[in-house]
Length: 119
Image (cartoon, rainbow, N blue to C red; front, side, top):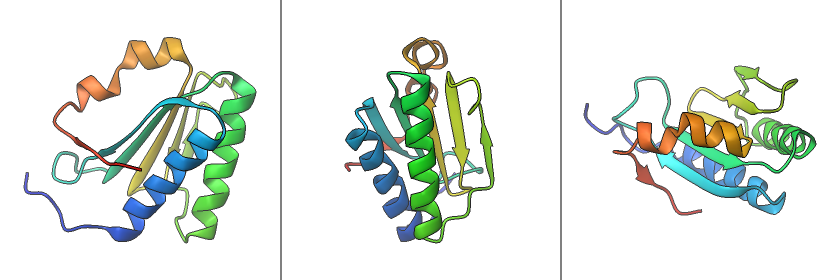
């Protein structure tokens, strides 16, 4: 799959989401550039949270940042359980994991060909 053209708005939002996760004390934060690797999205933001409450706070703040940057949230999953919260903004998908689920699903290994984006 050829790498798609840069989507500046999506990249900026992915970086903003990673920064929110960092400010809220998530760990192991990674932004993956999936352009050309995934037909579904351009960027993954992956972070590990410390508690259900913290992960929900990060999810809420990322959703608000999305609204402020004109990125509509298409879907949200796992919010109530707080083990793996997925926020789907179409061009950016944010994954907030607890440490057990992060290790089990190992998205970085699954998408090992993706370039990491500095944030």
